[in-house]
Length: 122
Length: 122
DNA sequence: CTAGCGTGTAAGCGATCGCTTACGTAAGAA
DNA sequence: TTCTTACGTAAGCGATCGCTTACACGCTAG
Image (cartoon, rainbow over all chains, first blue to last red; front, side, top):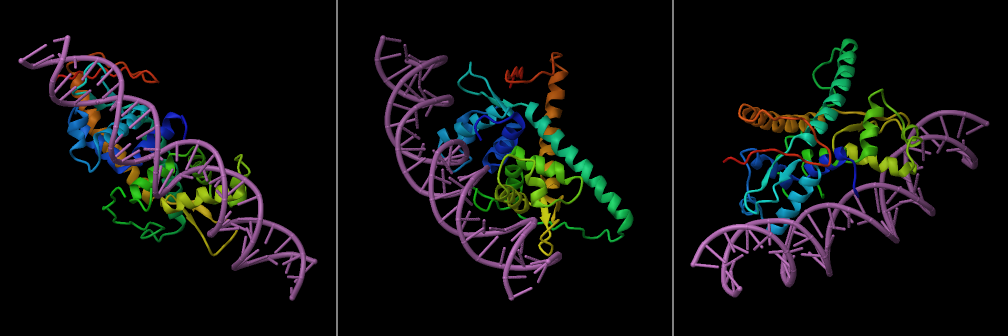
């Protein structure tokens, strides 16, 4: 991944649990790097690098004028990602609905819901 | 990424343009690995490995009984990914709407220039 | 001015990714 | 049976990721 398109960068950024958690925390308002870093078992530069990834993906914006209080959310890339994923879902959910008209076994197609929540970094 | 949670695996799988294109092609119905491989400038084992990534992410299902015609779509992980992304969007679009009541300059534009006009009022 | 704080970034390391070629396996045709 | 087809997987290589420590820059307080 070396300067990918915006959509790929957005998905790649969302693939990391720490980065997703950063986005969740930023929903409540802008935060400093240090404010974010205390919640994760890694150094502040590591958090800063995660923020750089999110920034290049267009998911956060950093106000460089102020050195404190600078990380906030952006919507552009997430809109793209949501649009792509929803289009896929809409199309093949439609396909599954068509199948249902023939196969009336609408209980379990091929959906194995994996109740997995403990994903942690390494 | 070493045995990540399902959501991380799904986003990571979607981060690759080739894999996203594979998903799009599979919307039309099951395909063989060779059928897929002819569309990409890479070897057939490479496509097979992409499919393995998609399979582990829960985005495609492979019918191992038949060795031809075996790759089709699955919805479980995409539902998770869509749910996560939509929840984020809903929450912070609401925040932006609240801002709009104060700032009427919500010009929707985004490319490399992040003209994020988020007022850091608090 | 200097001292101190908060931050970004460079260098380095181990692990993983994406791709290649080469090999091994399973099902159908002769 | 043997041959062919389609596929999966192992090994290897260059590039990237995620993290660390160390250092440099910008702003603020005194």
